[in-house]
Image (tube, rainbow, N blue to C red; front, side, top):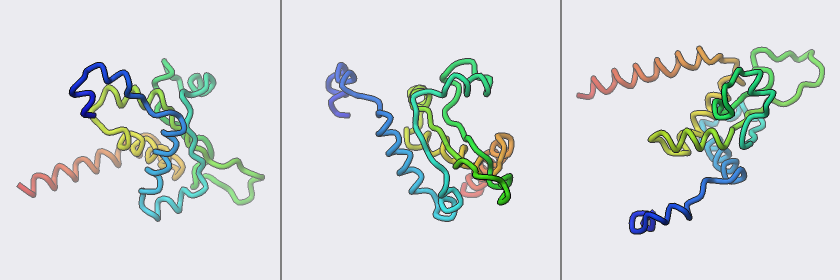
Length: 152
């Protein structure tokens, strides 16, 4: 990063991570999650692609290909049936270009963004809805704020 500071044109040499590099990052983020959490999601396949497929965008009602950072595909754990015929593995898709676009516009590390998206999609694997996860995040933020007030 020192190069960028001394030479503003050095930004040209800075490159966004490739699909393979982002997949490695996602794997590392997953390995750093709590073991109990990882164990419950051990059968989930994590894939990285540049953008969601057109049919996914249509199904999700996305306005642009940058609207989705990630996607869970499959049947959540609470909804699985032992008597069901062969089931495809649950999959989590991380979309590189929308994630990089979000990263460029926010003051978060790329690792933190990938972690947030990955944990959110694993939440769907556990059967949580977007509303469930929003409520959990809000409760966590309120608890964090209350703890901060108590520390003063």
